Image 1 (tube, one colour):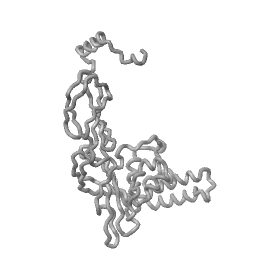
Image 2: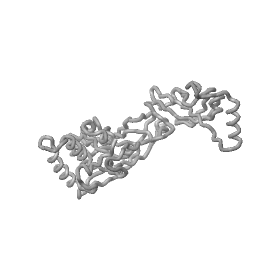
Image 3: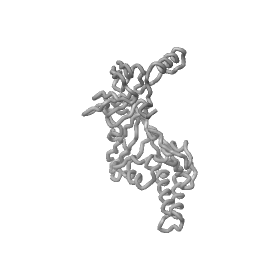
Length: 312
């Protein structure tokens, strides 16, 4: 997937004000609107212009896009880094889901889940609902936690330029929370009008990237390094897990990739998930005379060919 430079699409500078973006969008719309344009691929260009305007005319989306885009150039191969948008607070107006369907995969990869299906209150006097993504440690799902999180939101200043603001909130992370689950904070969304209630804030929970773990619903897969002798002879080993340090038995003649299932040791719930310890055989380096001698002895005395099943 290629990175899209929305500023280039509208033909504006990255410091453009809201008024300049609005004028640029109108100019491009007159040029490419399929009902009047004679330009080749007018419909495709109009879609790109609409997409760029949807991001750059929204202070919250623009602030998030600017942070991400500072490391990329138009046409460059792009994959959103995990958790890139964590901590950004967006207004949910119920339109994001439709936009994600109408626009490109690039747009959907950034904003496709933003507020979909929420925010109906924004059309009345009640304050609009907001949403943000937060990153937590996997251990927080096992034990519960209370965290102070900092959220960034954006607005236009008097000159029409985007400025960001921060606010801190104390949040209780419930025991057993899952990836993608929402935590609702009542009254922490947009302010109401005419004395009506404020909207709600929905925090979408994601786990911090950790190469040790893979998570599927409430099941957790953890890679556990083992020595050749532990795998061959069997052993009782201690393994640090999100549930704490556990003592587990490695069966004799285990191979790399073998899964040891610990029932009910996954993310708590009703029912809880399982914890799968995935064995990874790690060879000691042959970096001493003693180590090389041991490897040479095995090479001479063990009748073992791992490629025998291949006909070698």
